[in-house]
Image (cartoon, rainbow, N blue to C red; front, side):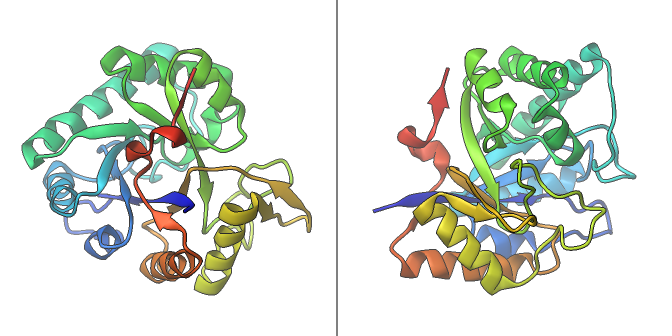
Length: 261
């Protein structure tokens, strides 16, 4: 039976400002990328989400980002290597402490937003994030964009890596994500999302905005928690995969899904 991980970005509410429906998403996903306070999230809210994840047996990862609360971590930045290594360690360490208090463990790292897209191709910033992960816990798995140069860079550095596809984001022909500044970059139709991800899982292909299909092999699928249709998308996707005999399972529990250099 084929299997795939389903992840979502959670814990992004800040004080009285809510972001997404974390409880509903935790009933659907198998892995939760939890904000670490730099791009979103506050300690009390993050702790609450971690407790909910622990109660449901959902795998937890550190969703590290640029120091950019105002821009939700989606603005390009160019921190020094010392800053980026330190920020990576700081965020992971903070989440590890909260996770321990919640009765769970941080098992992987998934960079957020602009940082995620930058390190996919920027070897210097990628090396800084990799160095930060290795410094605090080299057993952590890095979740990275399928097909991007960082995958082999991280493996060569000795990190375990799992490749990710995005259910609710449009792709360019080179395998990169379409800029959020462009129309159609975010997909809101549950049926479209479910069908394109089913094809990715069963055939290893995904359609791009250029009208071509590209190969895409991933072990985890992401649905953004801040997408207004996130819960509906996740439910439709889970149901579609289940009907085709695809099992949803946390990638951290699937040794074959994780590759180490």
